[in-house]
Image 1 (tube, rainbow, N blue to C red):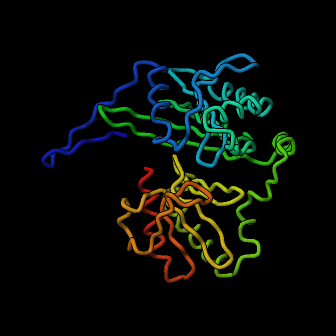
Image 2 (image 1 turned 135 degrees about the vertical axis):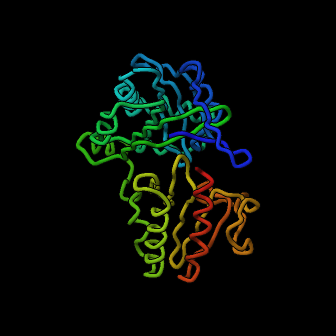
Image 3 (image 1 turned 90 degrees about the vertical axis):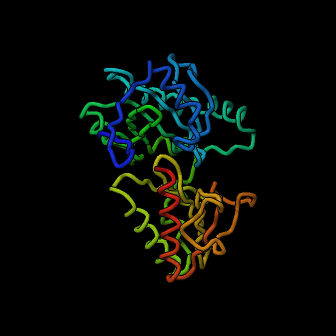
Amino acid sequence: MALFSISNSKANKLERQEFANEKELQHFVEINLDELFGIHFLATEFTISNGGRIDTLGIDENNAPVIIEYKWGENNTIINQGLFYLDWLFEHFADFQILAQQKLGKDIEIDRGSPRLILIAASYSKFDGYAINRMAENIEMWTYNKYRDILELRLVASSQSKESGIHEERKRATKISYEEYATSGHLEGKSETVKELFKEIQDRIMAFDNPGAIEEVSRKMYVAYRTNRNFVYINFRNNKLFLDVCLTPDKINSVDKSHIRDVTKVGHHGAGYSRFELNEFDQLEEATKLLKESYESTK
């Protein structure tokens, strides 16, 4: 897709450029990892005991391990390599945990049951997207286009973990209660108003973009929604919802700021900076504007 700059109402096509090599691409992503994907950088070229080196290791906003692999030229083995490294992660989780604790402190709690594999390439074959849709892992395929001082990132395919015999064995091995992670579990015991408000908010969030562009991430203490990074964390109470958006109060322009609470220095679940308390249906329009603004900030 062509991009154009506009000067005095005249369109000027931007010429696509390329990183000099895979290392330059990798280095650029790693130094901008938090801004691009909301991921904390942990290691580069991490040597594993099974042989081979993981290009980039990180941990995301939901405390899930992340493996990033880069495809350069006609490298058709990137998916197989990524799966090989995911297997290593499941079998040698203690090694990852030690690394994360060294970088982020011993109190870091890691969601070991939901690791992500991110693949980054200029393009893929038409078969790659079909392949990951048949796999029982969290895999994301991203493409990029580089122009003079512009980088475009696009999610072209993703596959959230599916139920399979192998995956069930891994779940049992991690000793995590996945029922707690189900979105429906957050609604148990909540008022009918909260259930209806959440369903309405959920539908509105998913309508912000094309199907598959926004991912729902359910964790033990919250439900988050993300594109390349999280843009809202929803915390559930008996009679209300806390919508914690990833915008600081000074960046919010869509709603009355008197309705926003600054939670940047308040302990809470998730990593949102501004809180909107939703407990009535007549607040839905204002809440939607806020969520849309937070969503747009990640694009």
